[in-house]
Amino acid sequence: MIATIINAILIVIGTMIGLLMRKGFSERARDTVFTATGVISLVIGFSMALGGSHILALALSLIIGGLVGTAMDIEGAIFRFGEWLRVRFTPKAKPGMEAAGSVDAATGDAYAEGGSGDVSPDGAKAQSEGSPTKGESGFAFGFLNASVLFCVGAMALVGSFKAGAEGDYDLILTKSVMDGVVAIMFAGAMGIGVGFSAISVLVYQGALTLLAVQIKPFVSATMLTELSAVGGALIVMIGINLLGLRKVRTGDFLPSLAVIIGLVFLFDYIPFL
Image 1 (cartoon, rainbow, N blue to C red):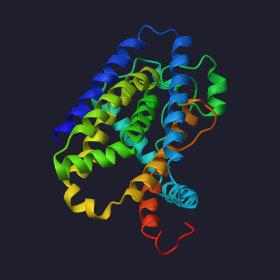
Image 2 (cartoon, helix red, strand yellow; image 1 turned 120 degrees about the vertical axis):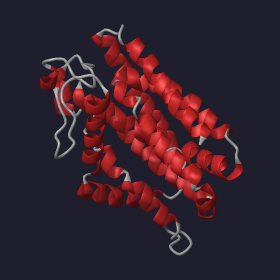
Image 3 (cartoon, rainbow, N blue to C red; image 1 turned 30 degrees about the vertical axis):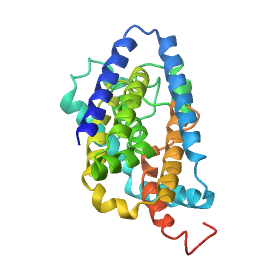
Image 4 (cartoon, rainbow, N blue to C red; image 1 turned 180 degrees about the vertical axis):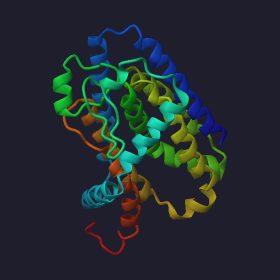
């Protein structure tokens, strides 16, 4: 668990650095950071997704997982949790902030003008294209996207297994440094919600580390590869949202990770998957 705790701490430190850097940004500079973060997300996502070799399984995972997540309103639940964290742990918004945009408690929608912190110079355009809202819902948007990015990669899975089953912390420590650097950019674009993704890392990686001995016999190299590919597709969705290309409810696709695990067990029986 010590490596996972270090991972969480570095995410918080990276977020603090990103927030400090962000204070001196003009609106145009913030928009530049937001765009760069979106492009980086696309690059990371595509590199992971293209590592998979079972395209049909990837497609089925995203479709089935997306339908399940939509029925369960997973993104809405995550946004509501993010808003609860904001209310519980951050200072009250200044008067007038509520008008800037807020999360729909029923749907979790958090896409209105300007990004998470008046990033976009054109609020109307951002609203029509699906950029995240600023202020309150921007917190939840940052929490969601950073949580997905830091948890779905192969390094999180393999590193947790190696730490728990073998006592080898090298991979998680390497990931920790990388996450800290990425947190700087994400916090610069999306705000303090990014730092609270450390909670997701603690819970997710911590659970995997503690259960590593029991889970490891069932985890194959193929499963890790295909899980990473689906995770990459989710990160591509983050990039699409950040660039305002389309509103994608990334959280609703999280069940795709469970679906691909089930499909991997079928590869020996259904070769065309």
